[in-house]
Length: 507
Image 1 (tube, rainbow, N blue to C red):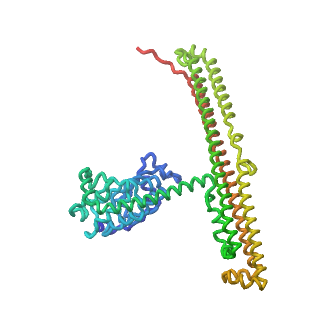
Image 2: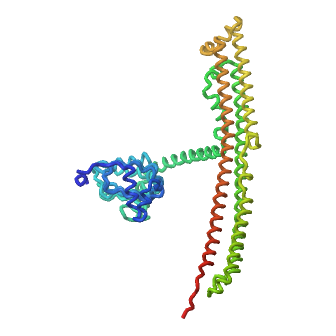
C-alpha cells in the first residue's frame, strides 16, 4: 500500500471531504438538496471514505447518527476522533503501517466508547510479528462486539489462538468469518479461566462503580429538574462556609467552637426543608401539566369523533349527487350540493372554533408570580436561612468582642494567650481587621443565600413560561393544521362538484 500511494499527499478528514462523500451517497435527484447549505448531516447514517489518502480521522462530530463508516485503503495510523459517534456500529477495514494495530488497541482501551457494537478489523495488517496477542484483551471493552476478523496476522498461526480470543471476548459470534460454536466457547472458558477470572472481577468492580456514579448523576439530574440541586444534606451549608478561613481559625476559642458545632445542624434542617418543599412543588407542577394534557387530549378525541360524524352524515346525504350520470341531473343538483358543502364547511369551522376556545392555553397555565403559593414557601424558607445566618453572626460578633476586651485586661491576657494559637492571637490584636473580615464573610453568605433563592424562583418562573408557551404553540399549530384540512377538504368537494366524473357504461 505504501508504494501504491507513494506519490499521493496524505489528507485529514475535513468538512469538504465529508460533504462530497454525502453528495456521492445521495441519489442523483437529491444531489441539489445535499449541496444546500442547511443540509441535515444528522440524517446521514453511512459514510464511504475509502481511497482518500486519509492520515488522521477528524471533523466527524456533526455526523452524530452515523452507524457505518468505511475507511479502508488510507494512511490511518490510529483510531481516534470517533468519540462523538455514539451510534457507530460498523467500522470498515483500516489498513495500517507497521505497529498500527498496537496503536488501535490502545486507542480502544483509552476510549472504550468510541466503537459501540461491531468492528470489522483488517484481514491483512502490515504489522511486526512481535505484536502480542494479549492486546486483544483491550477489545473486552466493546461489550456489543459480535464480529471480529484477525486472520492474516502473525499471531493467528499460534496454537490455541482461537481459544484465547474466544475466552477473552465471550460475546463474539463470528471470529475470522467462522461461527463460534458452543463447544469452542466452553473449551476456551475452561482453558483460560485463570486469566479471565481476574479480568471479570476487575470489570465487576468497575461496573459497580459506574452504576453508583450513574445513580448519583440521575439523582442530580432529577434535582436539577426540580431546581433543588445541592440543597440536600449539608451541601448548602458547606458551600456557604467552605471558604470562610477567618471563622475557621476562630474555632479555637471555646465559646466560638460551641457555637460552630450547634449552628450547622440548625441550618441543615432548614436547608432540608427547602429541598423537600422544592421536590413537593415540582411533583405538583408536573401533575398539573399532566392533568392539562390529559384534558387536552380528551377534548381532541371528542372533536375528532364529532368531525367524523358530520362528514359521514354529509357523505350519506350527497352520495347520489356525485354519482349523477347526466349533465342535466348533475346541474339540477349542483345548487343544492354547493349549499351542502357550505354548510359542511360552516359546521366544521364552528366545531373547530368551539374546540379552540375550550383548549385556550394561556388562562389555564398562568405563569408563576413571586407572590404565588408555589414560590411563597421558597421565600419563607430562604428567610429562615437568612435569620439563622444573622443570628449566628450576631452571636459570633458578641463572642469575639468579649474575647478581645478580655485580652485588653491584664488579669485575663495571660490565661487566654496560653489557650489560643499564635495565628488567632495575631488576628485578635487588630479589632477593625477581624470585625471587617467577619462582616465581609457574613455579607457574602447572605448574598449566596439570596442568589440561591433568586435562582429557584427564576427557574420556576422560566419553567412555567416554557411550559405555557409550548402548550400554546402546540395548540396554535394544531388549530392552523385543522383549518387547513377543512379548507382543503371542502375545496376538493367543490372541485368534484364542478367537474363531475361521468362513468361510461361497460359493454
